[in-house]
Image (cartoon, rainbow, N blue to C red; front, side, top):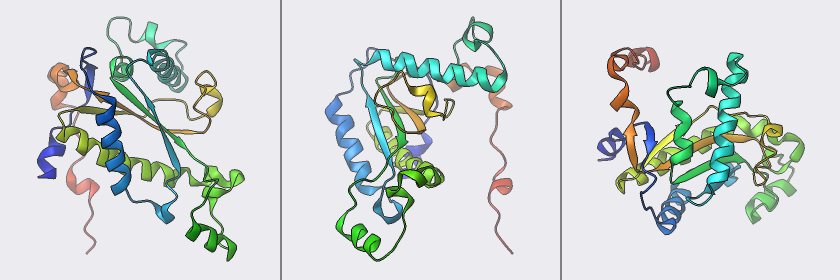
Length: 222
């Protein structure tokens, strides 16, 4: 059952850098996810940049980006030195994952025939308009989340661990040192074989770090 599969997902504190996960398997799982993930008007307004095992320099740069964002948010000059001198942040799994997925915004510059027909009829779509693309960010974020969820399930079915990171700069100017990131980032996702799960080291915080009660999240309207 898919419920049992998804229950196996745990946040990875550290990945096994010796794990061998073939690029062909990741490609196949991404292809299957692409086939089943829904998208409004079939625009899929995001690009997924796959950073593989040999691209450590980009993982290092993304890690520094996440740390810089934390410093900006919390008013710290360098949180890696000040806050994490003896224990690396949770997003340090970026450094040792097998694959890092960077989701960014995408402009559709080649609409499909049906989209072109609707555009010719006068329909306006932010996904094809450079000046309005930022208005698509909430939709792109939602759809990228759907992709992540489906991809996670397929990875878990193949005994591959995944984790998500939302701590990074959204401002594209902060990504100038990574040449393929040309549009606003949406999501980071790490993939690999876990060496240490976050739950393994939580200790007494596990009983405190709980999600909100179900009834506070789901409201059945009477």
